Amino acid sequence: MSETNSFCSGKSCRSRVADGLDPRSIAPGATICNACCDAMVRDLIALPDLHEECAEFLSSARSSRERTSGGPLPGMPFNATVADVRYTIRSVLGAWCGLIVDERGLPHPGRCVQERAEFLRENIDWLARHSAAAEATNEISRLVRDARRMIDPNPPRRFAVGSCSVPRCSGTLIAVLGARDTLAAAEVMCDHDSGHRWSATTWLKERSSGSRNGGRWLSSSEISYAWQVPTGSVYRLASENKWRRKTASGRKYYYSMDVERTLKTVGRTSR
Image (cartoon, rainbow, N blue to C red; front, side, top):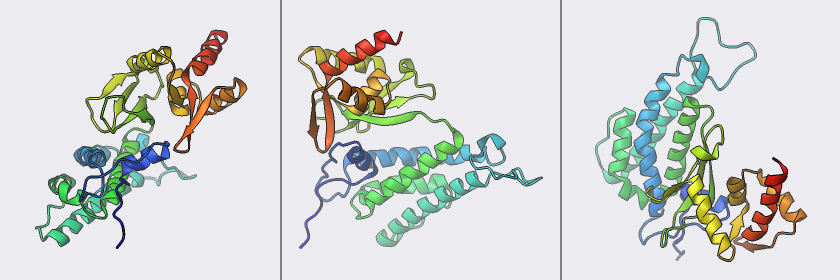
């Protein structure tokens, strides 16, 4: 008999693994963790509005993300890329609704995106226990990402900076930088509990406090975000200045006191 996988492979946990963090464990009977399930619910709430917002860009030249050498056909100011995104939203949601209808014997929801998204949310507990749940989180997340790219060609940058600092929280902290990458407007939020969020300056103060109390181990992503330097520069500075480092789960961490000593000097000389 094959063993049941006790770790989540949903979209949020796949991102955690890509950032060198461990996936979350899953409850008995489920196939994705609570955080990935909650993220899918948030995406389903967002999709109907995103679908409608995309409609405003169907004939808008400023929304076009793909250009041909000859430009649009005369008299055809139609954005096919946006139309494809809207069609994909409807069809993907329809496919997941069809799975639930077939396997649960429920009546079909309506054809509009709002009705399909609500139907999936109503059956989210059942879907979270299905063997295809992880793939559902990935596909639905991709729909949100693609729709937002149509609406805003310069969306905020998001990347993981470590595990949530709130005790007993299994979430990952996500740094969000706006188009201008200004630290004053940036924030750090937990992907598991939306109440766990801080401004970038508050988060950095907490990290600095930990450093003064004996030092902490920081990932390259945390260093890049905190000091606003490219990740490539982090590796170069670590090598040149012989920062103490350790490896955990295949990911390198650097001693914060070495990092601060170097980057404070870099900051002074760059002024």
